[in-house]
Structures are given as C-alpha cells and as structure tokens.
Image (tube, rainbow, N blue to C red; front, side, top):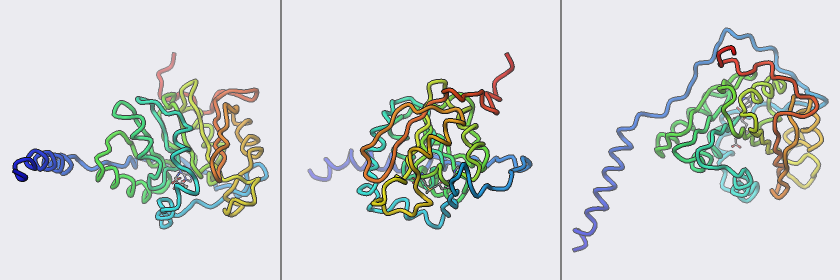
Length: 257
Ligand SMILES: C[S@@+](CC[C@H](N)C(=O)[O-])C[C@H]1O[C@@H](n2cnc3c(N)ncnc32)[C@H](O)[C@@H]1O
C-alpha cells in the first residue's frame, strides 16, 4: 500500500532529475571587447577614496549565515517592489546572493542580468543556477567601464554593496543610465557612513550626502529612500534632474531614426 502510494512521487522526482540532467548548463557571457582601452583606475572620486574590489576568494562571506540578520535581506528585496515580468540587473552580483531571489520574483516572463567584473564570481553563480534549474538569469562579464547591458530595457538596476567599489564611477553611471527604461530605477544599498554603530570599515560605507553628490551630476535624481534596514541605506534614483544630459552612450544599439 505504502509502496503503491509512493510510486507517483518517485516518478515525478525521477522526471525532475532527468530534466535537470538534460538541461544544458547556464553559460556566462564572457564576450568582452578586449580591444577597448580602459583608463587607469581612479583612487578617489569627488573627495571619496574608492574601495578595492572584493576578491572572489571572499565569496563565502557573501552567503554567510548571519547576513539575513545583519542586512534584513528579505525586507531589502521587498522594498524594491519587483513585479513579475520585469527586466532587472543585479550589478556587481558576486556569487549571486540576491540574484536568485530577484529571478524568483520576476518569474519566467522576466529576466535578470547578473553582471560582475570577476569571471570567477559569475562561474560560481552559473553553477548554482544550473544546479537549481533557474533559467531566467543571464550572467554577463562586464568591464570596469562597461556593464555590457542592452540599452533602454532595464526596469531596475540593483547595486548592493557595490557602488563604492566602482573604479570608474562616472563611466559606470553613464552606462547604467543608458540601460534603463525612461522610468527605470537605479537602487543603491550602501552601509551607512553616518552611523558609527555599523561595524563596517569606513572605506566600505557611504553617507547619503556623498551618494547624492556623486549621482546628481551623473544625471540621476532621488526618487525615494527606504530607511528601515539595520545597517544600510537603500536609495532609489531615476534618470533626470537639473543636471541631466543625454548619456554619452545613448541607445547605441538602436538603428538611427
Ligand atoms: C561586496 S561584493 C557584493 C556582491 C553582491 N552584490 C552581494 O551583495 O552579495 C561587490 C561585487 O561588485 C563587483 N564589482 C566591482 N566593480 C564592478 C563593476 N564596475 N562592474 C560590475 N561589478 C563590479 C565585485 O567584483 C564584487 O563581486
């Protein structure tokens, strides 16, 4: 009796395993144009010292067990108000701590571009996507000046603990702006620089004032703020504002009108 009732379950499980085995591994788009010159990295930007890129050997820290408690990641993602079918970018995705949850929220009709400058991070993410059968994420190798996103299609670009590491912030902001839909959002999560109780090195923190001072001249204006995370600012920006000029890399892939 027990055996007979278990049969459909076993069948379903074996079909699922067969599908997982048959599905091709998720590929990383590594087709960076190596001939494009990259200026030397800046050490400072608008009075702020730029932090070193977090090395991929530190990836286990990104999936540490205490992260939910320290960052309230569930509330962070909830505050993004993601809708099924949206096109998102997890910029500086690392090994994909946030990517998989974003993919789940946009669902099969949506897409998440997962961009990083370290191929090793993207390979860790791709392995995880393959293992978990997630098919709506596109891992993309970016360069420090070009995230290689398609122009004008992204609803929301999320940078969690990433912006302060950009070695070429102005170039990255310009490309991000070109990738957004007209009402698209750029969202930065940065550890609060104003708050000495946040136990993170000052180099890896930012104040709201510093973020605004850097994003406004780059053609972004503040859209809203979410102030209920334990350690981080969550700042939403839209393209536009007094200083907005067309991005230097406007919808380059579109045919001329
Ligand atoms: C501290 S980790 C955060 C990873 C991930 N956002 C998370 O919260 O788990 C910062 C990541 O940003 C990436 N990064 C730094 N500069 C970048 C750039 N210009 N474009 C894309 N990724 C970048 C680094 O390689 C690193 O994986």
